[in-house]
Image 1 (cartoon, rainbow, N blue to C red):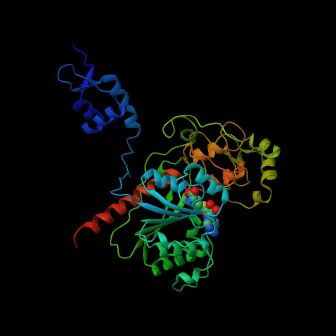
Image 2: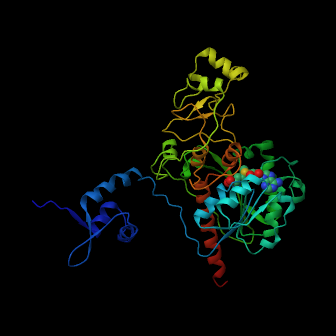
Image 3: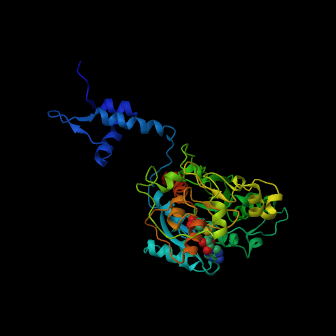
Length: 414
Ligand SMILES: C[S@@+](CC[C@H](N)C(=O)[O-])C[C@H]1O[C@@H](n2cnc3c(N)ncnc32)[C@H](O)[C@@H]1O
């Protein structure tokens, strides 16, 4: 019996469940090297190489989801409240150009300029900028405006009712630029802020300035290739003259965990680089030393539970974020702006310390090359504030899909 050592292009394509074109591309990209038959020059694939590819394909079988979309032309974004650029990086990765970014924090601005010297960083209070010059020049306005209450008594609100808040500034920028689509992002808590009145007011204001708001949605970062249980509320406004549906990005099935974030593997092709980081005070370290991976304050002896938790011990509720040590095989809990604060400890799985700056950045899916400026605590703050880059990228694809459809419909004779 002759044991088959090679597969033809069609056989390999069939076994892997991929098209012949994909295999040719993999060959060109060096992902799967083909041999050539001596006379015909047809591609041949080593059997053992194809067999070794089958398992990873099965491992990722649920990841048939693919939100990626190429822009049909250059799309530009004005990113407000840009921070250290988490959302901006994601949008850029999806293929959207940053026309300008506004941010008040000087360290975050330095971070943006250091990493992308060509980006147009508008430093300072948004209140001091007029964005009319971007009218007709950008396709998207985005912004993670900090959440503030404004008085809403069940009546329909207009832009002027929100004056003095940062949402007002966001909406004013949208009005000045008048893009086909605008996207606001916020904490999930905005849903219940003032029993929902704050959000209802925002929707009413966007309506008044000419935007239909798509039913709002909380996106779980963990469904978008982010090794963290972070959630963001997304508010999408579509300009009223556009009769097209915006679709949120589809969730991926596979979930990434801390090991994917910090070790060489599916998310990064090297272990996390060494970097600075903060430490726990002596007492907290002594307490956290007793907590196993994936454990929290309930894993302490009862007397220590009472001492560490103080009044919270008697208040009920899980408080599962307190004295928490993350495990390698789970996504991190949501990172905050300072890594050692009580209530939100996220201790490293093996060492009793908070995550370092670069570990923080990895959990937020920033690229390792992205530098953060300012003191260590300024760096943590910028990272903790960010939209995870991978989530931003998927949001970016959803915008591209929408804008592609919009500009194609515009170019058709009416
Ligand atoms: C939640 S963070 C945005 C994070 C960013 N989207 C990212 O993905 O990295 C909100 C940002 O708004 C900025 N900010 C707050 N008040 C501002 C103002 N008046 N003008 C401009 N930026 C402001 C803060 O400094 C902070 O960086």
